[in-house]
Length: 241
Image 1 (tube, rainbow, N blue to C red):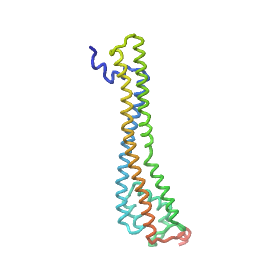
Image 2: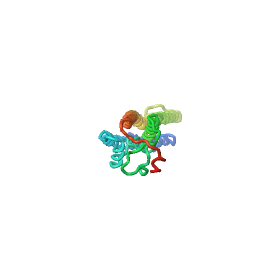
Image 3: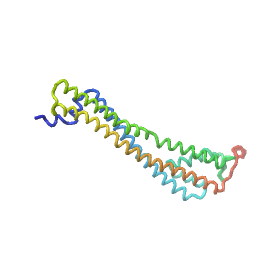
Image 4: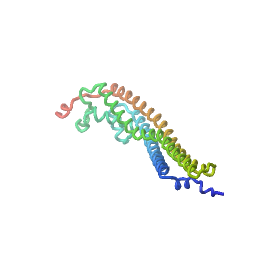
């Protein structure tokens, strides 16, 4: 009777040919890369959600843009929504050092709602590009891993039939080891693909909700700016003071 240990997965891997071993090595690398991306994205999106919650609490308690700017600096807010706000501060307002102490907070001259909208749209795209980074790799791993595993399976089955032809014996004892070895590649392909596909779908859903939040905040920020009394002066006027 054959030793059961001889039919272990480790035995199949060590006794298989270089093609099957290469397929399994590729699938192991895919699986490691997939889980690394999953853990990184879970932590990144969780951190972004917490940062958004903190910033929105500051935003709701602020009465003026000037106050919101200083509250954001004081609390060292980070996150995609805070990044949108900081981008508006950077591109649409005058340098704080150029404004004399005690004067009103100043916007760049000629700032319009359409320009604010363009700034915010560009910021949203930048933030989404950052948070979508490497997500496509999960889709690639999920789509290709089963086919790579299937390739290993086909090679294993071909080798099994080749062994049958060489030994001129067609019984289960001859066929079973080769078929089992071949199916290991299929199992490895599915093991790499299933978590990647599930994680990809979850992340796409969460990123879609994040984009909606950014767009909603952009609309609220424009309304907040339009209803807040701010001074609009040019850089030259400030420098002359």
